[in-house]
Length: 313
Length: 276
Image 1 (cartoon, one colour):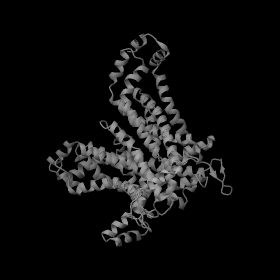
Image 2 (cartoon, helix red, strand yellow):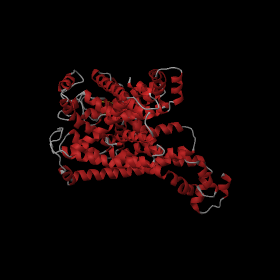
Image 3 (tube, each protein chain N blue to C red):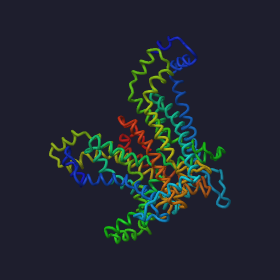
Image 4 (cartoon, chains in turn orange, red):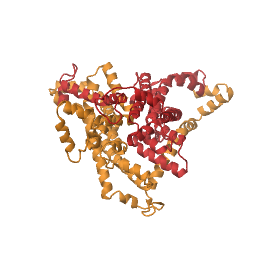
């Protein structure tokens, strides 16, 4: 084939250029890959590296100016009780959100994969994708309306005469608060709502790959459907759940808008990073705190890999 | 153990418990946006009272006459178009390279393309911001576009490479055998083949950019995109009823490209691998 292309009469500079490239696949590859790699490799990775490098600098306590001398002082600040508190709060929230997403998402994914017909599956698929792609801010905002003290949830509880139950929930220590939109419970619900599609899609894909013959074989061998579910279907769905949990966990870890708008304004990692770089002008501090979600995610990814999450992505 | 009961009748249908749980998940995902529409019509402009005391279209009229909203909208559209254009160019180049060639470091390139959406937006945003600071670039329309293009590339890339993988390499070989050069082959064979995937990827990139707020808060200076306008309103509510109207509008603007992209790739599930 290369002989044919080379034999073709060289008409015009474009044709000659094409032939020239054809004989040099490496150059073609370089030309194709250069623009995107310049962008992502230099602009994006470069700025990421520059940011992380700045975490080795520190901010002078008195002048508030950045001292450009390598030091571990900024990392040391991560281990102060106040910082550890923030990290713990964020990680616990991310873990509970992941758990909640798995519990709500699994039945939906299971129904989609095993029981929905072709048409129903398309509808389900759109119903999961549309919220995923709709505006993040608008979706958070919709919960501000719903969770407000005078909003629909309070109204619903009142309608069925359970105002007492709502008051009891809000009076709970730690997770409660003056209203649902100013409590950890509210924040937890909003986080779950925002990231749920990321859990459903990989779980659904994993369940779809479970061969029907395996389930039939299990039934033929006398397993109760409950046993089949526990011993055949669930283990095969674990990689999907692990893959989904990567997203729900990572996205919760880095978010700073939801803890700002919903909840009791106790700081989360994202908010600290934001305020360090913004009002405080403490870029080294922000960079050091940015390392926390990256490191936590590295640990999490290593664990997820052992569960087979990467084959289910 | 409703799920177990569900599988009792595998083949015939799901159990009641599973159906209820699936329905709950579906409503949980889709019902909240209905409230945005409802509150855009409420006559109550001070609180979030439910049920609304009355319905009105007044806020839509008021929002129409607000210059700041129009300005924010115009900026958002300009940024999304420019970001989409850059992402289309870079994403297509990357997908062509990755489709045609096997080379050392291929895995690393895939990871690099995925990284901007795999890492939390705040990491992307703050690193770009500090890089602009170091380089002495002042924040402008172009810094916003730069940030947006970075995470939009992957959407175009995913769509185009999925289509390329499914198209037959024999077509390209036939075109070359018939004497077409690489450019002619691209123009007459490859491009028509991936056109709808490009369109779908472009639409998703537009929607992604039009909605983006986290990276934008870092890469924008004084400029306000529509999501930034909304965020400011959410943090310090001034025009609550107008915020509702803008929210409805934003949903409508992003819904159309998403439905379009789904329609264009419905046989192939292209868009499925392209989650934000």
